[in-house]
Length: 175
Image (cartoon, rainbow, N blue to C red; front, side, top):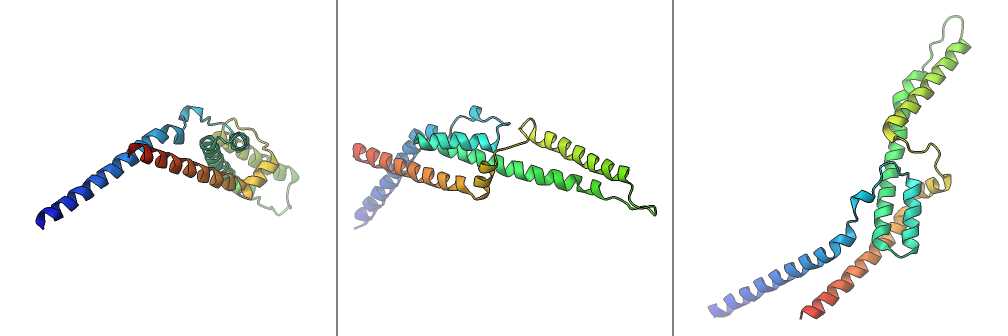
């Protein structure tokens, strides 16, 4: 009776080791496709460019590239928007104009506005580098309506389907 218990534990241990090794081999075979080369990441690309590249990859059914482009586009969009907000908040205290007894001086008013514009421009340049000032409004609206997440979700779905097919193929050929 004790021998059967030891045999059952040994079989259970072997199946766990087999499952772990199959998972490891499967992950290693797919790892190069899941994690694209970081040298393709260009810091000064706009989310508009990432979106266009993601759409091209999506239309060509290159699911791993689609994921990579849209994830970078979303990161860039979040960074861009937070940088704009940061710069506006940082430079907002320059617009406080003290009104003298004589009233508001027109020259002082425009001087403060130009100081604020200069502050925002300098802050944007420091945070965003050489990215273009104007970005396609249609693409911005798509990011605001979270359209890239739909494409990203479908690409993740397709990648999971490919992984399950590869796992089944590997499992069948290894038996």
